[in-house]
Length: 361
Ligand SMILES: *Cc1c(COP(=O)(O)O)cnc(C)c1O
Image (cartoon, rainbow, N blue to C red; front, side, top):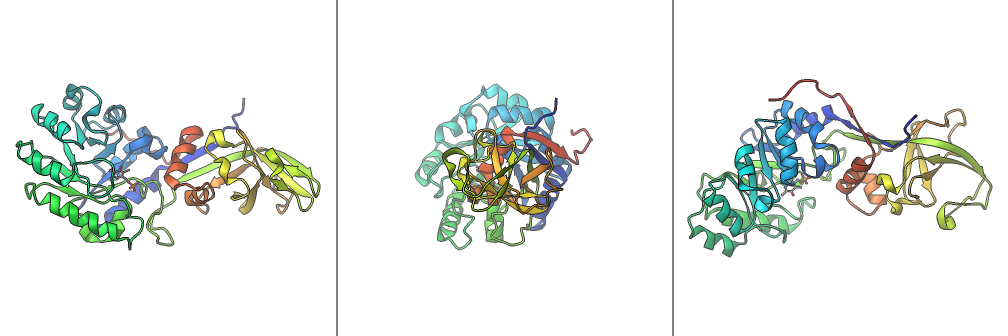
């Protein structure tokens, strides 16, 4: 039986190339960690970490203990930091598998200290999410805690180069780090922070989006290679007359005799309902509007301007490609490109191109 599941294909060499691009933007003294949380942003944690290791990446951030265990099975020697901190799993699990919690509360630091578990210290500098505030850090230091392996914080507005909050967060970070041993390595920037300048790089940057080909730099063309292609099959071709409606609630009315392509991708595959009448897909190298509402399993495209000999049942229609970045889909769906990757990557049939064959230590 033929599968008509949409295909989410991942170019593993492009991920390696993007790791190298990030490296090239930093001084050699600055280390790069790969953030592979949320199943590597929907691309598949197990499949991307080997190629990243081959490209020279030795340090990884995951969301949870569950992801850390999966990663440890793949890479026995990698450094693995867990963003959820010490909240899950026995202390033994961290020690045995050599996993590093990112501690965001004084209680977690106290637990790591007592159990002699190396940890990363997370500081709150203006994101308003997790991490120790200045007063918490100051009180903590009176308790003689274990020295962290790394101290980090996270920028809220790095995508916006001119945003004054970036400076504010950096200055707070420097101020808080001054309370710690000067030799403690520091990390502030994620992908977008790389482009804020060398004084945001500190000792380590933590990149996710950039590795997966997203461009949150504002630079055109993107310095990063496209990684993901999302394509779905044309399963029917129909003709509608002028004045006929297409799809739920008839939100598209044909203003000319229209050739309609029915495509096997819907919102259950992560193609957001909101993109109705707001997105163009690509077919045979041309742009084709998505018309009418996206339904659960299907959507419709306008093939009127495509030569009839090209419009064949079973042909692929692209929703993400080298020329149609995930950012287009994100704009049409009023969300961010990361959410597009996670939703479509998690729901479609994942394929991998250029899979390296080697075993990883
Ligand atoms: C997700 C995350 C990153 C990676 O962010 P990108 O913008 O995708 O590079 C880095 N640090 C922390 C704490 C994160 O949560």
